[in-house]
Length: 340
Image (tube, rainbow, N blue to C red; front, side, top):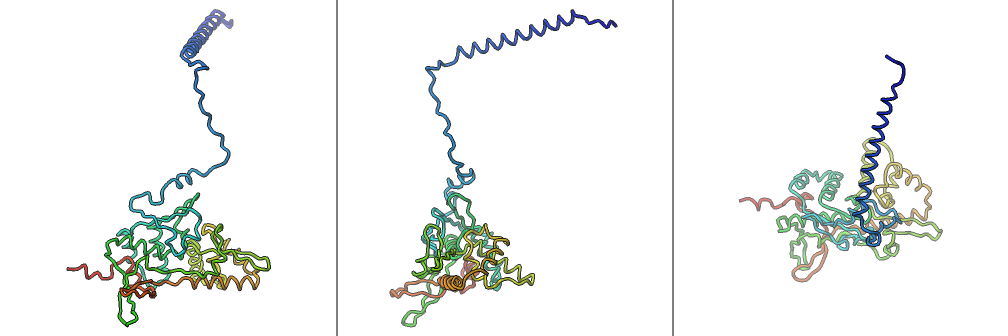
């Protein structure tokens, strides 16, 4: 085999490459001419609007979708006016909405397992019904049943109950005695419940912007008290339970104030709770005295009663009690009436 290069082959290859390049350039030129021939003259083009520049980050996409969805969009959900709640909506963010639905057979079946002697179990079961049958919508962020105020829970439970037994299948009655000593039976409904009544002087410290009580001391010290949410109460309940089961000590004095110390249940964890306990050791005697009085007033404001008007026009209030036990909220007490 010869070591000399065969320039004839190289020339042939160069010729082929040049021919291919010419072909590509010719096809590109023809394509450009065709595009130019069919293009709309600049003078005849309609100006297209430019996309607006972003000036803010805006809301997260999931929040936009959440805000656009009606609170009772799905079939079977019913909005609850906040002004009808015991709290009258005063302690929720502006624009908050609440809706309920009827309890299902499966949920009532679970409710039937309640042990009325287990107070923590009763509390869990009430929250179970609220979680399943109640929605809350807070502007700009997703809502949870844990955002509901504890003082509104019982009203919502009875609202769910009334919606579940719309045809009066499960009436709850309390016995009241009129001025003449005659006993009457009064039906318990959400409208007849009188659960929470605050003193007027306490409301002098309510702040409409922050939706809580703001206490300003003459010493210059200022602090806030919030109406407890279900989420905050659940954390405190579990905290106490875990400490007791482990045989560990905890600050029992702080427990009295803890439910009113946190505005958002999502910020409450072991670290934030421990820090709040540590901070409480620096409270002045004046602050402790004010907090103790306010907390006592708020606690006394919760007094479950049934308001009624008797046939003769006599008005009154009777303590809320459950003749068939708390189970009777969602279980029919006079079930033998259903038997042949």
